[in-house]
Amino acid sequence: MKIFKLIEEEKKYIILQVIFDLIGVSCLAVSPLIQKNFFDNAGKYEIGYIIRIIILYFLIHAVYIFSQYVCMIYAFKGGVIFEKDLKKKYFKSLFSRHDYEFRKKEIGDYISFQANDITALEQDYLQPFIDIIRSGNMFLVYSLVLFIGIDWRIALIIITTSIISISIPKIFGGLLEKHRDIYQSELAKYVVKITDLLEGFRLINNRTINNIEKQYEKSLQEVAEKRYSFGKVKSFTLSLSLFLTKMVKVITFISIVVLFCQKEITIGTGVATLSYVSALIDPIDNILYDITTMRSVRKIRDEYISFIKYKKDNKPKKDSFTEAISLKNVGYEYENFKLQNISFDIKVGKKYIIVGGNGTGKSTLLKLIAGYLKPQAGNILIDGKDINDVDHSDLISYIDQNDHIFKENIENNITVYNSYKYERQKYMGLSLKINHILNSTRSNCQKMSGGEKQIISLLRAISKEGDILLMDEPFSAVDYEHAPILTNAITTDKIFKSKTVVMITYGISKENIEKFDYQIAMRAGNAEVSEITLNNLEIMSNTKLCKKD
Image (cartoon, rainbow, N blue to C red; front, top):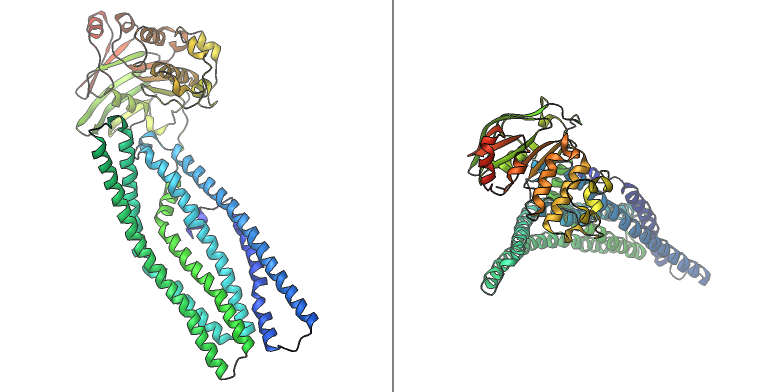
Protein backbone atom coordinates (compact mmCIF):
# COMPACT_ATOMS: atom_id res chain seq x y z
CA MET A 1 0.00 0.00 0.00
CA LYS A 2 1.09 3.56 -0.78
CA ILE A 3 0.51 4.55 2.86
CA PHE A 4 3.78 2.78 3.74
CA LYS A 5 5.66 5.15 1.42
CA LEU A 6 4.60 8.00 3.70
CA ILE A 7 5.17 6.64 7.19
CA GLU A 8 8.60 6.23 8.81
CA GLU A 9 9.18 7.54 12.33
CA GLU A 10 5.52 7.20 13.25
CA LYS A 11 5.43 3.43 12.52
CA LYS A 12 6.10 2.53 16.15
CA TYR A 13 3.21 4.68 17.33
CA ILE A 14 0.88 2.97 14.87
CA ILE A 15 2.03 -0.47 16.09
CA LEU A 16 1.54 0.55 19.73
CA GLN A 17 -1.97 1.77 18.92
CA VAL A 18 -2.83 -1.56 17.31
CA ILE A 19 -1.44 -3.57 20.27
CA PHE A 20 -3.26 -1.59 22.97
CA ASP A 21 -6.44 -1.51 20.93
CA LEU A 22 -6.30 -5.29 20.45
CA ILE A 23 -5.91 -5.76 24.22
CA GLY A 24 -8.90 -3.54 24.93
CA VAL A 25 -11.13 -5.08 22.26
CA SER A 26 -10.28 -8.64 23.36
CA CYS A 27 -11.33 -7.82 26.92
CA LEU A 28 -14.54 -6.17 25.76
CA ALA A 29 -15.40 -9.12 23.51
CA VAL A 30 -15.76 -11.32 26.62
CA SER A 31 -18.72 -9.27 27.90
CA PRO A 32 -21.44 -10.79 25.69
CA LEU A 33 -20.28 -14.31 26.67
CA ILE A 34 -20.73 -13.38 30.34
CA GLN A 35 -24.20 -12.09 29.46
CA LYS A 36 -25.06 -15.32 27.66
CA ASN A 37 -23.98 -17.48 30.59
CA PHE A 38 -25.85 -15.27 33.07
CA PHE A 39 -29.18 -15.30 31.20
CA ASP A 40 -29.03 -19.01 30.42
CA ASN A 41 -28.51 -19.76 34.14
CA ALA A 42 -30.62 -17.00 35.70
CA GLY A 43 -31.79 -17.78 39.24
CA LYS A 44 -29.04 -20.35 39.85
CA TYR A 45 -26.34 -17.98 41.21
CA GLU A 46 -25.63 -16.83 44.74
CA ILE A 47 -25.16 -13.17 45.59
CA GLY A 48 -21.38 -13.61 45.99
CA TYR A 49 -21.06 -14.93 42.43
CA ILE A 50 -23.14 -12.06 41.07
CA ILE A 51 -20.87 -9.54 42.85
CA ARG A 52 -17.80 -11.18 41.30
CA ILE A 53 -19.45 -10.97 37.88
CA ILE A 54 -20.10 -7.25 38.42
CA ILE A 55 -16.50 -6.66 39.49
CA LEU A 56 -15.24 -8.59 36.45
CA TYR A 57 -17.52 -6.53 34.25
CA PHE A 58 -16.09 -3.37 35.74
CA LEU A 59 -12.48 -4.49 35.29
CA ILE A 60 -13.10 -5.49 31.66
CA HIS A 61 -14.46 -2.05 30.82
CA ALA A 62 -11.75 -0.30 32.86
CA VAL A 63 -9.04 -2.09 30.83
CA TYR A 64 -10.84 -1.16 27.61
CA ILE A 65 -11.13 2.53 28.57
CA PHE A 66 -7.44 2.65 29.57
CA SER A 67 -6.39 1.02 26.30
CA GLN A 68 -8.41 3.55 24.30
CA TYR A 69 -6.85 6.41 26.26
CA VAL A 70 -3.36 5.11 25.43
CA CYS A 71 -4.40 4.71 21.78
CA MET A 72 -5.56 8.32 21.60
CA ILE A 73 -2.26 9.53 23.08
CA TYR A 74 -0.26 7.53 20.54
CA ALA A 75 -2.59 8.62 17.73
CA PHE A 76 -2.01 12.29 18.58
CA LYS A 77 1.75 11.79 18.92
CA GLY A 78 1.98 9.80 15.68
CA GLY A 79 -0.16 12.33 13.81
CA VAL A 80 2.04 15.24 14.87
CA ILE A 81 5.21 13.39 13.85
CA PHE A 82 3.60 12.26 10.57
CA GLU A 83 2.61 15.79 9.55
CA LYS A 84 5.97 17.21 10.60
CA ASP A 85 7.81 14.48 8.69
CA LEU A 86 5.76 15.03 5.51
CA LYS A 87 6.32 18.78 5.61
CA LYS A 88 10.04 18.32 6.23
CA LYS A 89 10.37 15.92 3.27
CA TYR A 90 8.28 18.25 1.10
CA PHE A 91 10.44 21.29 1.74
CA LYS A 92 13.64 19.31 1.49
CA SER A 93 12.57 18.13 -1.95
CA LEU A 94 11.44 21.66 -2.83
CA PHE A 95 14.73 23.27 -1.81
CA SER A 96 16.71 20.73 -3.85
CA ARG A 97 15.16 21.89 -7.13
CA HIS A 98 16.76 24.09 -9.73
CA ASP A 99 15.51 27.65 -9.84
CA TYR A 100 13.83 27.17 -13.21
CA GLU A 101 12.03 24.07 -11.89
CA PHE A 102 10.95 25.85 -8.71
CA ARG A 103 9.38 28.70 -10.69
CA LYS A 104 7.09 26.40 -12.65
CA LYS A 105 4.59 27.03 -9.84
CA GLU A 106 3.66 30.10 -7.86
CA ILE A 107 4.97 30.39 -4.29
CA GLY A 108 1.36 30.46 -3.11
CA ASP A 109 0.82 26.98 -4.61
CA TYR A 110 3.69 25.55 -2.56
CA ILE A 111 2.46 27.25 0.61
CA SER A 112 -1.11 26.07 0.04
CA PHE A 113 -0.02 22.47 -0.51
CA GLN A 114 2.14 22.53 2.60
CA ALA A 115 -0.46 24.25 4.81
CA ASN A 116 -3.64 22.57 3.56
CA ASP A 117 -3.00 19.43 1.54
CA ILE A 118 -0.33 17.89 3.77
CA THR A 119 -2.53 18.55 6.80
CA ALA A 120 -5.36 16.82 4.92
CA LEU A 121 -3.11 13.78 4.44
CA GLU A 122 -2.69 13.49 8.21
CA GLN A 123 -6.38 14.03 8.98
CA ASP A 124 -7.99 12.28 6.02
CA TYR A 125 -5.45 9.58 5.18
CA LEU A 126 -3.26 8.52 8.11
CA GLN A 127 -5.91 8.70 10.83
CA PRO A 128 -8.57 6.88 8.73
CA PHE A 129 -5.95 4.24 7.89
CA ILE A 130 -5.26 3.65 11.59
CA ASP A 131 -8.99 3.65 12.30
CA ILE A 132 -9.47 0.95 9.65
CA ILE A 133 -6.85 -1.23 11.38
CA ARG A 134 -8.48 -0.70 14.77
CA SER A 135 -11.95 -1.33 13.35
CA GLY A 136 -10.57 -4.44 11.69
CA ASN A 137 -9.27 -5.58 15.09
CA MET A 138 -12.72 -5.25 16.59
CA PHE A 139 -14.44 -6.91 13.64
CA LEU A 140 -11.98 -9.81 13.62
CA VAL A 141 -12.09 -10.46 17.37
CA TYR A 142 -15.90 -10.22 17.63
CA SER A 143 -16.42 -12.37 14.52
CA LEU A 144 -14.07 -15.02 15.91
CA VAL A 145 -15.86 -15.09 19.27
CA LEU A 146 -19.20 -15.18 17.45
CA PHE A 147 -18.06 -18.17 15.38
CA ILE A 148 -16.64 -20.13 18.29
CA GLY A 149 -18.74 -19.06 21.25
CA ILE A 150 -22.19 -18.38 19.80
CA ASP A 151 -23.36 -19.74 16.42
CA TRP A 152 -21.37 -20.08 13.20
CA ARG A 153 -24.47 -19.67 11.00
CA ILE A 154 -25.29 -16.26 12.40
CA ALA A 155 -21.63 -15.29 12.18
CA LEU A 156 -21.55 -16.26 8.50
CA ILE A 157 -24.64 -14.16 7.73
CA ILE A 158 -23.20 -11.09 9.47
CA ILE A 159 -19.78 -11.36 7.83
CA THR A 160 -21.23 -11.87 4.33
CA THR A 161 -23.54 -8.86 4.63
CA SER A 162 -20.70 -6.75 6.00
CA ILE A 163 -18.37 -7.54 3.09
CA ILE A 164 -21.06 -6.43 0.64
CA SER A 165 -21.54 -3.13 2.45
CA ILE A 166 -17.78 -2.47 2.58
CA SER A 167 -17.55 -2.80 -1.23
CA ILE A 168 -19.86 0.17 -1.80
CA PRO A 169 -17.16 2.87 -1.50
CA LYS A 170 -15.09 1.07 -4.14
CA ILE A 171 -18.04 0.99 -6.54
CA PHE A 172 -18.75 4.71 -6.17
CA GLY A 173 -15.20 5.78 -5.43
CA GLY A 174 -14.50 6.96 -8.97
CA LEU A 175 -17.49 9.31 -8.99
CA LEU A 176 -16.59 10.63 -5.56
CA GLU A 177 -12.99 11.26 -6.59
CA LYS A 178 -14.09 13.07 -9.75
CA HIS A 179 -16.25 15.52 -7.81
CA ARG A 180 -13.51 16.08 -5.23
CA ASP A 181 -11.01 16.89 -8.00
CA ILE A 182 -13.42 19.45 -9.43
CA TYR A 183 -13.84 21.00 -5.99
CA GLN A 184 -10.07 21.08 -5.34
CA SER A 185 -9.45 22.65 -8.74
CA GLU A 186 -11.97 25.38 -8.04
CA LEU A 187 -10.48 25.90 -4.57
CA ALA A 188 -7.04 26.41 -6.14
CA LYS A 189 -8.52 29.04 -8.49
CA TYR A 190 -10.07 30.72 -5.46
CA VAL A 191 -6.68 30.94 -3.68
CA VAL A 192 -5.09 32.44 -6.81
CA LYS A 193 -7.93 34.96 -7.10
CA ILE A 194 -7.71 36.00 -3.45
CA THR A 195 -3.93 36.40 -3.73
CA ASP A 196 -4.36 38.53 -6.85
CA LEU A 197 -6.96 40.78 -5.18
CA LEU A 198 -4.92 41.23 -2.01
CA GLU A 199 -1.78 42.08 -3.99
CA GLY A 200 -3.82 44.82 -5.64
CA PHE A 201 -4.94 46.23 -2.30
CA ARG A 202 -3.56 49.70 -3.05
CA LEU A 203 -5.93 49.95 -6.02
CA ILE A 204 -9.00 49.71 -3.78
CA ASN A 205 -10.92 52.97 -3.45
CA ASN A 206 -14.53 54.15 -3.43
CA ARG A 207 -14.85 53.61 -7.16
CA THR A 208 -13.27 50.14 -7.32
CA ILE A 209 -14.32 48.45 -4.06
CA ASN A 210 -17.77 47.28 -5.28
CA ASN A 211 -16.40 45.61 -8.42
CA ILE A 212 -13.52 44.02 -6.51
CA GLU A 213 -15.98 42.65 -3.94
CA LYS A 214 -18.07 41.23 -6.78
CA GLN A 215 -14.98 39.44 -8.13
CA TYR A 216 -14.38 37.93 -4.70
CA GLU A 217 -18.02 36.91 -4.24
CA LYS A 218 -18.12 35.31 -7.69
CA SER A 219 -15.05 33.20 -6.93
CA LEU A 220 -16.44 32.31 -3.49
CA GLN A 221 -19.78 31.25 -4.98
CA GLU A 222 -18.10 28.96 -7.52
CA VAL A 223 -16.14 27.23 -4.74
CA ALA A 224 -19.31 26.81 -2.67
CA GLU A 225 -21.20 25.24 -5.60
CA LYS A 226 -18.43 22.72 -6.31
CA ARG A 227 -18.13 21.84 -2.64
CA TYR A 228 -21.90 21.29 -2.44
CA SER A 229 -21.80 18.97 -5.46
CA PHE A 230 -18.98 16.99 -3.88
CA GLY A 231 -20.92 16.84 -0.59
CA LYS A 232 -24.03 15.45 -2.31
CA VAL A 233 -22.10 12.57 -3.90
CA LYS A 234 -20.28 11.85 -0.65
CA SER A 235 -23.56 11.90 1.31
CA PHE A 236 -25.21 9.51 -1.15
CA THR A 237 -22.29 7.05 -0.94
CA LEU A 238 -22.20 7.11 2.83
CA SER A 239 -26.01 6.85 3.12
CA LEU A 240 -26.11 3.79 0.87
CA SER A 241 -23.35 2.15 2.87
CA LEU A 242 -25.13 3.02 6.10
CA PHE A 243 -28.34 1.46 4.80
CA LEU A 244 -26.58 -1.82 4.11
CA THR A 245 -24.93 -1.92 7.54
CA LYS A 246 -28.24 -1.31 9.26
CA MET A 247 -29.70 -4.15 7.26
CA VAL A 248 -27.20 -6.39 9.03
CA LYS A 249 -29.12 -5.84 12.27
CA VAL A 250 -32.43 -6.60 10.59
CA ILE A 251 -31.18 -9.82 8.98
CA THR A 252 -29.50 -10.90 12.22
CA PHE A 253 -32.66 -10.28 14.25
CA ILE A 254 -34.74 -12.31 11.81
CA SER A 255 -32.17 -15.14 11.97
CA ILE A 256 -32.26 -15.14 15.79
CA VAL A 257 -36.08 -15.23 15.83
CA VAL A 258 -36.17 -18.16 13.37
CA LEU A 259 -33.53 -20.16 15.24
CA PHE A 260 -35.12 -19.42 18.61
CA CYS A 261 -38.55 -20.51 17.38
CA GLN A 262 -36.95 -23.74 16.21
CA LYS A 263 -35.37 -24.04 19.68
CA GLU A 264 -31.88 -24.17 18.21
CA ILE A 265 -30.59 -21.28 20.35
CA THR A 266 -31.27 -20.09 23.91
CA ILE A 267 -32.36 -16.64 25.13
CA GLY A 268 -28.82 -16.02 26.36
CA THR A 269 -27.43 -16.84 22.93
CA GLY A 270 -29.90 -14.45 21.30
CA VAL A 271 -29.07 -11.61 23.71
CA ALA A 272 -25.33 -12.18 23.27
CA THR A 273 -25.70 -12.30 19.49
CA LEU A 274 -27.50 -8.97 19.41
CA SER A 275 -24.75 -7.49 21.59
CA TYR A 276 -22.09 -8.74 19.16
CA VAL A 277 -24.02 -7.45 16.16
CA SER A 278 -24.33 -4.02 17.72
CA ALA A 279 -20.60 -4.08 18.44
CA LEU A 280 -19.83 -5.19 14.87
CA ILE A 281 -21.93 -2.50 13.21
CA ASP A 282 -19.74 0.34 14.50
CA PRO A 283 -16.47 -0.95 13.02
CA ILE A 284 -18.23 -1.65 9.71
CA ASP A 285 -19.60 1.89 9.63
CA ASN A 286 -16.16 3.24 10.56
CA ILE A 287 -14.41 1.23 7.87
CA LEU A 288 -16.86 2.44 5.24
CA TYR A 289 -16.45 6.06 6.27
CA ASP A 290 -12.67 5.79 6.51
CA ILE A 291 -12.32 4.14 3.09
CA THR A 292 -14.41 6.92 1.56
CA THR A 293 -12.33 9.57 3.33
CA MET A 294 -9.03 8.03 2.22
CA ARG A 295 -10.18 7.84 -1.38
CA SER A 296 -11.09 11.52 -1.29
CA VAL A 297 -7.43 12.53 -0.78
CA ARG A 298 -5.89 9.90 -3.05
CA LYS A 299 -4.91 12.52 -5.63
CA ILE A 300 -3.13 14.57 -2.96
CA ARG A 301 -1.32 11.44 -1.78
CA ASP A 302 -0.14 10.58 -5.30
CA GLU A 303 0.94 14.17 -5.95
CA TYR A 304 2.93 14.21 -2.72
CA ILE A 305 4.65 10.87 -3.41
CA SER A 306 5.50 11.98 -6.94
CA PHE A 307 6.84 15.30 -5.63
CA ILE A 308 9.22 13.86 -3.04
CA LYS A 309 10.52 11.27 -5.52
CA TYR A 310 12.38 14.11 -7.25
CA LYS A 311 16.10 13.75 -6.94
CA LYS A 312 18.38 16.59 -7.90
CA ASP A 313 21.18 15.46 -10.15
CA ASN A 314 24.23 14.55 -8.12
CA LYS A 315 26.55 16.77 -10.13
CA PRO A 316 30.28 17.13 -9.49
CA LYS A 317 30.96 20.21 -7.41
CA LYS A 318 32.95 23.05 -8.96
CA ASP A 319 34.71 25.19 -6.38
CA SER A 320 36.88 27.46 -8.51
CA PHE A 321 36.73 29.53 -11.70
CA THR A 322 39.99 29.59 -13.67
CA GLU A 323 39.32 30.27 -17.36
CA ALA A 324 36.05 31.60 -18.77
CA ILE A 325 32.29 31.29 -19.01
CA SER A 326 31.58 30.61 -22.68
CA LEU A 327 28.23 31.12 -24.37
CA LYS A 328 27.92 29.06 -27.57
CA ASN A 329 25.00 30.02 -29.84
CA VAL A 330 22.70 30.38 -26.84
CA GLY A 331 19.02 30.84 -27.54
CA TYR A 332 16.03 31.43 -25.26
CA GLU A 333 12.46 32.34 -26.17
CA TYR A 334 9.53 33.48 -24.04
CA GLU A 335 6.26 35.15 -24.98
CA ASN A 336 7.07 37.52 -27.86
CA PHE A 337 10.78 37.83 -27.11
CA LYS A 338 13.70 35.80 -28.39
CA LEU A 339 17.41 35.65 -27.57
CA GLN A 340 19.28 33.97 -30.36
CA ASN A 341 22.82 33.00 -31.36
CA ILE A 342 24.46 34.56 -28.32
CA SER A 343 28.16 33.75 -28.34
CA PHE A 344 30.92 35.37 -26.25
CA ASP A 345 33.31 34.65 -23.38
CA ILE A 346 33.36 36.05 -19.87
CA LYS A 347 37.01 35.98 -18.85
CA VAL A 348 38.14 35.21 -15.32
CA GLY A 349 38.77 38.26 -13.14
CA LYS A 350 37.34 40.76 -15.64
CA LYS A 351 34.53 43.29 -15.04
CA TYR A 352 31.61 43.46 -17.48
CA ILE A 353 28.75 45.90 -17.72
CA ILE A 354 25.57 45.00 -19.64
CA VAL A 355 23.82 47.85 -21.45
CA GLY A 356 20.69 48.04 -23.54
CA GLY A 357 17.13 49.29 -23.65
CA ASN A 358 13.92 47.81 -22.35
CA GLY A 359 13.08 44.38 -23.70
CA THR A 360 16.53 43.63 -25.07
CA GLY A 361 17.03 40.65 -22.76
CA LYS A 362 19.57 41.94 -20.23
CA SER A 363 18.06 40.26 -17.19
CA THR A 364 17.30 37.10 -19.13
CA LEU A 365 20.91 36.87 -20.27
CA LEU A 366 22.16 37.29 -16.70
CA LYS A 367 19.83 34.56 -15.42
CA LEU A 368 21.04 32.22 -18.16
CA ILE A 369 24.64 32.82 -17.10
CA ALA A 370 23.66 32.23 -13.46
CA GLY A 371 21.95 28.92 -14.35
CA TYR A 372 18.52 30.13 -13.17
CA LEU A 373 17.25 29.67 -16.70
CA LYS A 374 18.16 26.77 -18.95
CA PRO A 375 19.13 27.56 -22.56
CA GLN A 376 16.65 26.31 -25.12
CA ALA A 377 19.40 26.30 -27.72
CA GLY A 378 23.17 26.23 -27.55
CA ASN A 379 25.34 25.73 -24.48
CA ILE A 380 26.88 27.67 -21.64
CA LEU A 381 30.27 26.35 -20.53
CA ILE A 382 32.18 27.15 -17.38
CA ASP A 383 35.85 26.29 -17.70
CA GLY A 384 34.93 24.06 -20.64
CA LYS A 385 32.20 22.13 -18.80
CA ASP A 386 28.48 22.53 -19.45
CA ILE A 387 27.02 24.69 -16.70
CA ASN A 388 24.14 22.21 -16.31
CA ASP A 389 26.52 19.32 -15.69
CA VAL A 390 28.32 20.81 -12.67
CA ASP A 391 27.24 22.12 -9.28
CA HIS A 392 28.29 25.77 -9.38
CA SER A 393 26.07 26.97 -6.53
CA ASP A 394 29.03 28.03 -4.37
CA LEU A 395 30.86 29.58 -7.30
CA ILE A 396 28.29 32.14 -8.46
CA SER A 397 26.61 34.89 -6.43
CA TYR A 398 23.53 36.44 -8.05
CA ILE A 399 22.11 39.76 -6.87
CA ASP A 400 19.12 41.60 -8.26
CA GLN A 401 17.40 44.81 -7.21
CA ASN A 402 14.76 42.91 -5.25
CA ASP A 403 16.94 40.28 -3.60
CA HIS A 404 15.13 38.57 -0.75
CA ILE A 405 15.71 39.87 2.76
CA PHE A 406 14.68 37.60 5.63
CA LYS A 407 12.69 38.95 8.58
CA GLU A 408 15.83 38.58 10.64
CA ASN A 409 18.77 40.58 11.94
CA ILE A 410 21.71 41.75 9.83
CA GLU A 411 24.01 38.86 10.67
CA ASN A 412 21.48 36.14 9.78
CA ASN A 413 20.71 37.91 6.50
CA ILE A 414 24.34 38.25 5.51
CA THR A 415 25.30 34.70 6.48
CA VAL A 416 21.92 33.06 5.58
CA TYR A 417 21.51 31.71 9.10
CA ASN A 418 25.25 31.13 9.66
CA SER A 419 25.75 29.27 6.37
CA TYR A 420 28.56 31.71 5.54
CA LYS A 421 31.21 33.35 7.72
CA TYR A 422 30.35 36.70 9.26
CA GLU A 423 33.34 39.07 9.10
CA ARG A 424 32.07 42.40 10.39
CA GLN A 425 35.48 44.06 10.64
CA LYS A 426 36.32 43.13 7.04
CA TYR A 427 33.08 44.67 5.78
CA MET A 428 33.76 47.86 7.74
CA GLY A 429 37.18 48.11 6.10
CA LEU A 430 35.69 48.32 2.61
CA SER A 431 35.26 51.61 0.79
CA LEU A 432 31.50 51.07 0.67
CA LYS A 433 30.79 53.51 3.53
CA ILE A 434 28.29 51.16 5.13
CA ASN A 435 29.42 51.29 8.75
CA HIS A 436 26.08 52.82 9.76
CA ILE A 437 24.33 49.66 8.59
CA LEU A 438 26.74 47.28 10.31
CA ASN A 439 26.41 49.26 13.55
CA SER A 440 22.64 49.02 13.43
CA THR A 441 20.97 47.08 16.23
CA ARG A 442 17.77 46.48 14.32
CA SER A 443 16.51 42.90 14.74
CA ASN A 444 14.44 42.92 11.54
CA CYS A 445 16.08 43.94 8.27
CA GLN A 446 12.66 44.14 6.63
CA LYS A 447 12.30 47.55 8.25
CA MET A 448 15.36 48.87 6.37
CA SER A 449 15.13 51.09 3.32
CA GLY A 450 15.35 49.62 -0.16
CA GLY A 451 18.92 50.87 -0.55
CA GLU A 452 20.01 49.37 2.78
CA LYS A 453 18.51 46.03 1.78
CA GLN A 454 20.51 46.09 -1.46
CA ILE A 455 23.70 46.68 0.51
CA ILE A 456 22.84 43.72 2.75
CA SER A 457 22.50 41.61 -0.44
CA LEU A 458 25.96 42.73 -1.55
CA LEU A 459 27.47 41.84 1.83
CA ARG A 460 25.78 38.44 1.57
CA ALA A 461 27.51 37.85 -1.79
CA ILE A 462 30.85 38.87 -0.25
CA SER A 463 30.29 36.50 2.67
CA LYS A 464 29.54 33.66 0.25
CA GLU A 465 33.05 34.12 -1.27
CA GLY A 466 32.09 33.01 -4.77
CA ASP A 467 34.43 33.75 -7.66
CA ILE A 468 31.69 35.11 -9.94
CA LEU A 469 29.42 38.04 -9.07
CA LEU A 470 26.34 38.57 -11.25
CA MET A 471 24.41 41.75 -10.47
CA ASP A 472 21.11 42.99 -11.92
CA GLU A 473 20.74 46.66 -11.03
CA PRO A 474 21.99 45.96 -7.51
CA PHE A 475 21.99 49.61 -6.42
CA SER A 476 18.81 50.90 -8.05
CA ALA A 477 17.31 51.85 -4.65
CA VAL A 478 20.48 53.37 -3.21
CA ASP A 479 20.60 57.16 -2.92
CA TYR A 480 22.18 59.18 -5.76
CA GLU A 481 25.35 60.04 -3.84
CA HIS A 482 26.01 56.57 -2.42
CA ALA A 483 25.38 54.48 -5.59
CA PRO A 484 28.60 55.62 -7.37
CA ILE A 485 30.61 54.74 -4.26
CA LEU A 486 29.26 51.20 -4.30
CA THR A 487 29.85 50.82 -8.04
CA ASN A 488 33.39 52.10 -7.66
CA ALA A 489 34.07 49.62 -4.86
CA ILE A 490 33.02 46.75 -7.10
CA THR A 491 35.81 47.59 -9.52
CA THR A 492 38.52 48.84 -7.15
CA ASP A 493 38.30 47.26 -3.69
CA LYS A 494 40.80 44.52 -3.00
CA ILE A 495 38.10 42.05 -2.02
CA PHE A 496 36.58 42.28 -5.53
CA LYS A 497 39.88 42.37 -7.44
CA SER A 498 40.02 38.65 -8.24
CA LYS A 499 36.26 38.30 -8.77
CA THR A 500 34.60 38.13 -12.16
CA VAL A 501 31.80 40.71 -12.24
CA VAL A 502 28.91 41.00 -14.70
CA MET A 503 26.57 43.88 -13.86
CA ILE A 504 23.47 45.51 -15.28
CA THR A 505 23.19 49.12 -14.19
CA TYR A 506 22.03 52.55 -15.34
CA GLY A 507 22.88 56.20 -14.76
CA ILE A 508 26.52 55.26 -14.23
CA SER A 509 29.18 57.97 -14.21
CA LYS A 510 31.99 58.28 -16.75
CA GLU A 511 34.58 57.74 -14.03
CA ASN A 512 32.99 54.45 -12.98
CA ILE A 513 32.38 53.18 -16.52
CA GLU A 514 36.04 53.36 -17.43
CA LYS A 515 36.89 51.04 -14.52
CA PHE A 516 35.01 48.17 -16.20
CA ASP A 517 36.85 46.07 -18.78
CA TYR A 518 34.07 45.18 -21.22
CA GLN A 519 30.57 46.17 -22.16
CA ILE A 520 27.91 43.72 -23.37
CA ALA A 521 25.53 45.67 -25.57
CA MET A 522 22.08 44.07 -25.93
CA ARG A 523 20.08 44.88 -29.06
CA ALA A 524 16.92 43.08 -30.15
CA GLY A 525 17.82 39.75 -28.64
CA ASN A 526 21.50 39.84 -29.62
CA ALA A 527 24.64 40.60 -27.64
CA GLU A 528 27.79 42.38 -28.77
CA VAL A 529 30.83 42.33 -26.49
CA SER A 530 33.53 44.97 -26.77
CA GLU A 531 36.32 46.43 -24.68
CA ILE A 532 35.58 49.74 -23.04
CA THR A 533 37.60 52.41 -24.80
CA LEU A 534 37.63 56.17 -25.03
CA ASN A 535 35.52 55.90 -28.18
CA ASN A 536 32.55 54.26 -26.58
CA LEU A 537 33.03 55.70 -23.13
CA GLU A 538 31.27 58.97 -23.97
CA ILE A 539 28.33 57.10 -25.53
CA MET A 540 27.80 54.97 -22.47
CA SER A 541 28.10 57.82 -19.99
CA ASN A 542 25.67 60.03 -21.85
CA THR A 543 23.10 57.30 -22.25
CA LYS A 544 20.72 56.59 -19.40
CA LEU A 545 20.56 52.85 -19.36
CA CYS A 546 17.12 51.45 -18.79
CA LYS A 547 15.97 49.61 -15.73
CA LYS A 548 15.44 45.85 -15.43
CA ASP A 549 13.54 44.41 -18.35
